[in-house]
Length: 335
Ligand SMILES: NC(=O)c1ccc[n+]([C@@H]2O[C@H](COP(=O)([O-])OP(=O)(O)OC[C@H]3O[C@@H](n4cnc5c(N)ncnc54)[C@H](OP(=O)(O)O)[C@@H]3O)[C@@H](O)[C@H]2O)c1
Image 1: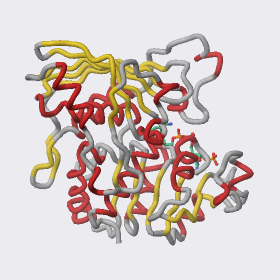
Image 2: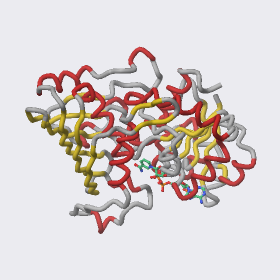
Image 3: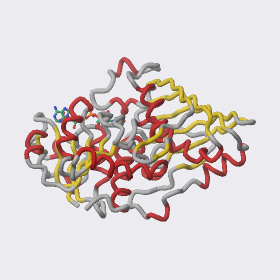
Image 4: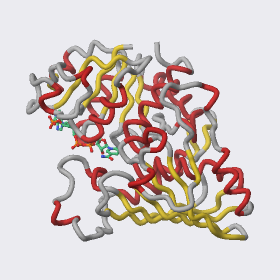
């Protein structure tokens, strides 16, 4: 299938390009960015571009929209542009997006294959509602992706409440990001809109697909988000109230969690690994960045705490989106 990446020169876009190198199902042929980058070879703009894509000339977004001519689009544009762009493209082609623009639409799934693959069925409702040949599938914001993958093995114990404090890497803020002076030697306990996203996206993801819509999970989620001077990899301290389960059972649930192994998706990796002391520098690249590392598990009588760390640009963005597209292909949603 012929594929385009929108926002290919940004933090998430570069990660898409790297992950699509040599992909067995998706052939990356079109790299889209702003007028500032248009017309230049990708390798000139992105120093560490994979050899395969170095000579591709970057296409301006406006030109691409006039004649998309691809079978599938991955979107890593800023949210401010994405709503309109995605809706135009989805009239014709499937769009897998990192932007938040459509995450809260009733007929658009926030997909994490290992957690709520069955929400992909919402695509049929969406196509009927909107009369599109294509569709839009979103993935969650980066910290929610890491959080929900770590919570999925605990669902069998009955989740009652979740409190989470995040320690998020600088690359989560994109290229324009934060000034070095602001983040050096510092922790910033404010990431605009992030706490609302974590609280609401995780309830939608962990909710149930019923009839033709998703009923969000009933439990409460409360979050505090902080930015810390780490380059890549978000770490989260999670306090979870469960109806049952012992430490041994929870640990076994983390260790055995491997729900999509049999589907043989090209990018699939075991989603959760247990390690006593998870740390971004040591563990963010596990499973090519798709595996989250859980540890520091403690607690009793339904009240537990643990730490998770995962790669924000891979598990939390481009890798998650790629896995979404692979699942959609495997289940017959892509022509
Ligand atoms: N960073 C993360 O960890 C993360 C995680 C999850 C989701 N996201 C979401 O993913 C999206 C991309 O984030 P990012 O961090 O990769 O951002 P970024 O580093 O700022 O990159 C933005 C990309 O969009 C392009 N762009 C900007 N303005 C444009 C315009 N007017 N027309 C066409 N292209 C334009 C840029 O092209 P030029 O280089 O030509 O300017 C660049 O390729 C956002 O919606 C973000 O919220 C990010």
